[in-house]
Amino acid sequence: DAKTTQPTSMDCAEGRAANLPCNHSTISGNEYVYWYRQIHSQGPQYIIHGLKNNETNEMASLIITEDRKSSTLILPHATLRDTAVYYCIVRLPLDSWGKLQFGAGTQVVVTP
Amino acid sequence: GAVVSQHPSRVICKSGTSVKIECRSLDFQATTMFWYRQFPKQSLMLMATSNEGSKATYEQGVEKDKFLINHASLTLSTLTVTSAHPEDSSFYICSARWQGAAGELFFGEGSRLTVL
Image (cartoon, rainbow over all chains, first blue to last red):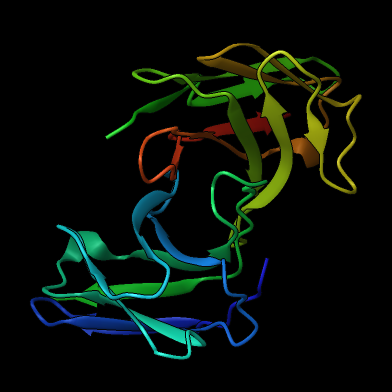
C-alpha cells in the first residue's frame, strides 16, 4: 500500500471548519483513500473514503486532487468531540487483500 | 453501522499467565478480522489477519506461538496472549471487514492489557 504524509498536529477552533491535508504521491490507480479517526483510548472510527471523486457524508467531506497525489479531509463545523488522531490511509480495494496499515496520523485538537 | 465488540475492555494479569480477548461482530458476518496492538503515544500496529476456518497470517516480527488467534465462527475471533510479560502490556484492538457495499473495516473498542 502507498505511504501517506500528514502533519503531526493541528489546532482548530470550535465551530470552524477543520481542513486536514494528506499527501500520497505514490498512490496507484486502484488504491482508495480512507480516513479514520481515533479518540483517546478508543478503537478507530471510519470516517469516509474515496477513489477519484470528492465524497461527502454526515461526518465529513473528502476532496481528492485531480492527480490523486493528495487529499483533504474537511470537518465542516468542528466540535470539541472531534479532538482525535486522524489517519489517512491509501489501500487496495476491499475485495483484494485489504489489510489496513496505520501511519502516525494527525493529532487534531479542537479548542473552545 | 456495523458493530464490533471486544471483551474484556480492561484486564490485569500476573506475569506468566495467559489472557484471552474476544472480538465479536454483533450484526454482521465477518470472514476476515484483524488484530492490532497499540503502545502509548504510538500508532496502531497490525499483528495478524484472521480468516474464519483457517490459520491466522501473522505480520513479520509477531510471534505466532505467543499470540494465538482463533477465528472459529463468522462472528467471533479470539486473541490469546500466552505467558504474558510486562512488555506485552498494550492496547489490543480488533477490526472486522464488513461485506457490505463499502466494505470498510469496523473496529472494536479495544482491550487494555496490563501485565504485572
